[in-house]
Length: 492
Image (cartoon, rainbow, N blue to C red; front, side):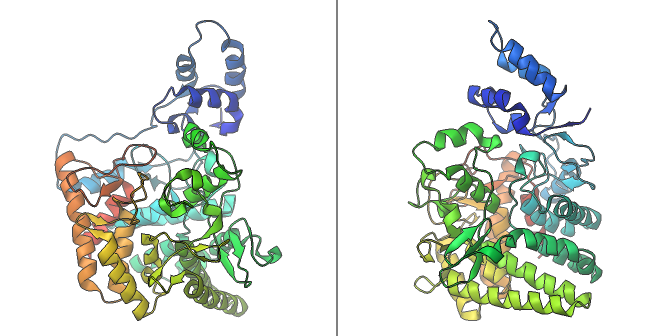
């Protein structure tokens, strides 16, 4: 029996389970594997649910398998941290050759983040690859690239994660940067030509709809400004509660606009779920307006994709395409300067598509133009000053300057931005600041590991006596991108 299914195939049962809160974590039911054909489970449920004494949890446990829903890593021996991570790579490796529950089949083994995340995640995988590179695990790096390519070729994009309910959104487009990592590890330009078609397909996904777009309007992931310039935004086609946070979304949606769920889902495509970055009032999730925002990180990553496509086109002697993508990258570089550089604060910010101005949120995604070498030296100096004064604490770089209780806000420090910060500062010669970022965060990771034997999803940068919190679920351990960034930073 093929045990793959889509949540909407058990919608009534799923809705009842999530509303009844029979699991502490709503992700549990999305990761369940049906033990019998879904049609039979549905029929049985309809027949039994009205009978006196019916127990919903017992019914679910009898009809679904929950093994592997959460990864628990317990080890008696307290190894040195690098040795612990080396063991973790094997423990976090999965081989999903079959479709099981909501899990998508992938052709190659991959690394999962850990904790409640027992599937392949897109942007996590880039930061995991940094550690695999440091560990000399080139084959697994290549596997990750191959899995991304498989998804782009077969789905049209890399979904948020490898489950059926993520087929409406992607995550920050890191595929072209993954190819750079492979090239850095084994310098062979064939890596770009081999995946040229994949790069083009991913680009088509992000640019879908640009031809028919009027000035001052948006469609899917594309927006045209009132001046006729193209910018990209995060987007999700579905306007329904997220299955993995079903009841949370329903409860949050009271007294909100008609596209509340789509705004929530679009923020998830960014990886920043959730942050004051997306809130109109800077405080409350009910005011989320992701769809009104073009993001500095996304547009910087798409510039890199355009540059990579120009490179791969050139290597294949496709002169017309090379010129096309070179031109597109040049225009986007200019647009990043025009729309995302805020002269008043001398900092990169997101752009509000309706208000025609930068958003007020100060956030760490301002690092992207420096990470990718898009900023000039003067801009880089101003960004570095802002980073040192407002974002760097004793436990690492925080994501925003606001404390809201959301996990992508103060006081949390996330692994990806420690690497982006370190590399961004190195790119422009701010070596001392780069070393401080590295040292502060690595010491925080080492302290928590020493106390708990765990590597966490995120860290508290302000109070290094505690573990980070906030968000919709407890802080997870494992943890893919923390392991990757820690090893890579220690190697540099």
